[in-house]
Image (cartoon, rainbow, N blue to C red; front, side, top):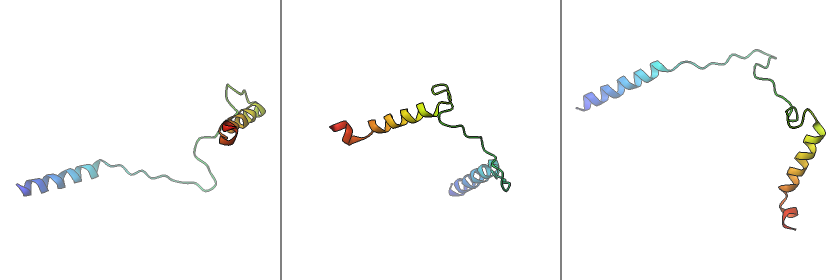
Length: 71
């Protein structure tokens, strides 16, 4: 009975190892291969208006200020 369990465990380990594919990333020196990042204000809400985005971020930060919220 234990020989069957050991054989089954070895067979399942072999099966799982055979299913795995290698996940290797190749890097090229000086080249970024990921997606390009957009500016945070480059969207429909702000329409590329950096000042409006900065004002919203300042207001958001002030709302997270515990001292200002309690007084």
